[in-house]
Length: 356
Ligand SMILES: *Cc1c(COP(=O)(O)O)cnc(C)c1O
Image 1 (cartoon, rainbow, N blue to C red):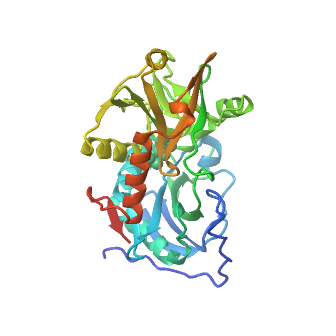
Image 2: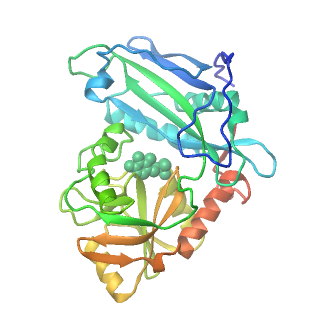
């Protein structure tokens, strides 16, 4: 191994939470990975240390101008061999560099990035829960630390990886959710940061999320920022629609986050002989398909929940029930396939598993 990060083990290991009652992203493990960037020096001093608060200068660029990015992936224990494994981590490394480029954060060596993930997962391997539908959620993130109120790309950064043993994103299992089609606020515009994984995209989405929740909807379906006509993403996940025999997801044209689960769904669908399209899909086309009885399924895809079926979609005053409020066959097939590969229960025909 080219990278050998020093490990300082904690002297005060925490008590582990009950694996049968794990919320998403609430508990954190005993260790974290830290690495700094300084101009002229590059990324340096990667290390695994005890999980602890981070002291920072109040003038740090991230606190004022939001120069920050994050990633999300998961580690599992193989249900057959007990081996610790990751799902397509090289994709997170590649996406990190694309996000970094958009936000003027210096690039990272992608192999080193994956080794850093492995180093901290290895240190806390005994935190990986083994109950069905649980996993160790991995959150790498980078933020700008230069103390200045001047506006320019920061000259120093911190790269941190924290780990959270997490239960199913939706505690009731694959329960279909209710979605509200947002027609006032937008998430992303052409030329903006929609395809970058950064906190700012989430902060600007909170308002619509809160309003939808007040109306009794769990998530929102975003429309494009220009015409508010084409469907884009579900909250913070990618969106899939089954109309007739066609499975449709929005094309990557700058406003969509290129989800690794999205890519995995497309590849699994193609391998299964489904007709899959990455194309513009208007909300009107969905309403018309609904009226004809051809709007069969809708689901969201993302690392946290993998697949999240939608049971009801509301656009203005039109309430569409999707597949009788039940999970549909396409969503179920994808969940079983992807979760099965992640945990080693299903053969990894695509070469997606990376041993730790
Ligand atoms: C992270 C994210 C996704 C899902 O990406 P995955 O790689 O599948 O987890 C989708 N949309 C947004 C806005 C995201 O931030």
